[in-house]
Amino acid sequence: GDESKKEETKPEKKKKIKKTNLEFSESRPLEWTKAEMDTYYEKEVSMSNIDRIVKETADMRNELESYVYDMRDKIISENQLGPYGTDSEKSAFSSALEKTENWLYEEGFDAKKSVYADKLGALKKP
Image (tube, rainbow, N blue to C red; front, side, top):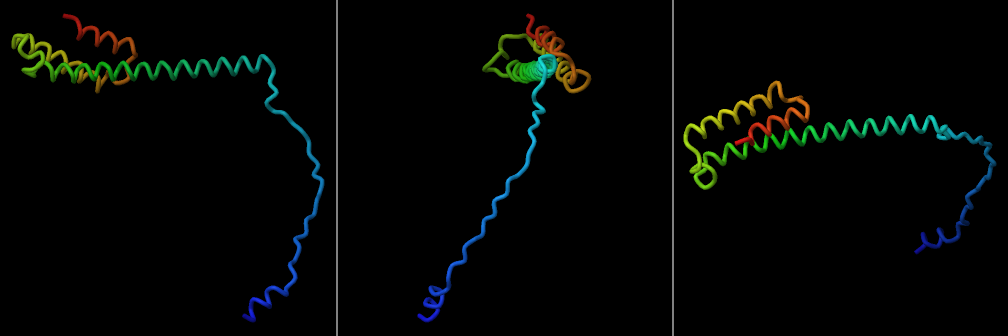
């Protein structure tokens, strides 16, 4: 009981606030000329195109890789394409798939999109 009375009698201290005017100067580093804006815009478009090409190339590589795995499974499955090909046809196609898969992980890993597309087209030909 005595402690609460002591706390009540203490006067609250007011915080002192000091206001100071700050000097400043204005600079606008982003005020570029039209030529500068055009230059940077062209660089951005160029980088965007490079990114798009990298993504499309990776997508095509994945498509080729998926086709190899998918078809390898389908030609051995009795529920898929297995019954529709002769042993020699399946063996030849399986060999082509294996060669393509090996190529993908070796010298073909950094190939261009068009090369992946050509390899995929060659595998899909009858």
